[in-house]
View 1 (cartoon, rainbow, N blue to C red):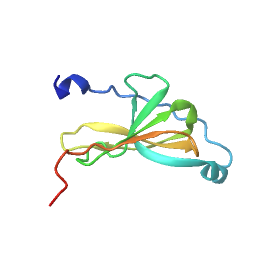
View 2 (view 1 turned 120 degrees about the vertical axis):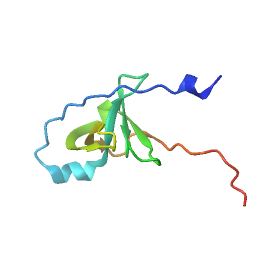
View 3 (view 1 turned 60 degrees about the vertical axis):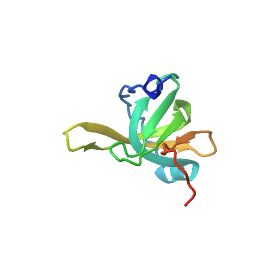
View 4 (view 1 turned 45 degrees about the vertical axis):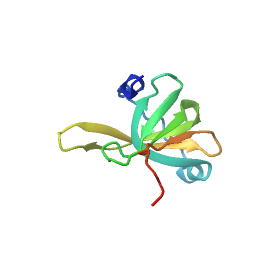
Length: 112
């Protein structure tokens, strides 16, 4: 089975900003902010994927439960050299919740 069987292009996930809390300082005490480009999880509609730096060669992504996100803030969109733009957001995720961070890497011999 080839690698392309597993890899599929994820559709863009438009996220609607939540209402800002009255006390932003308190939010920072109970939540952590993560920035990136949001996409709908391909298999689970209750999860969101956040690609940290989508146009970088060394990027990674986070996977969060939507229920663990208290606030989504819009950030300026980014554009690559081919004039393709991506929406960027800052997600405030509740401290202590379970999430996934996936970092792709090239398999190689680590011995000298």
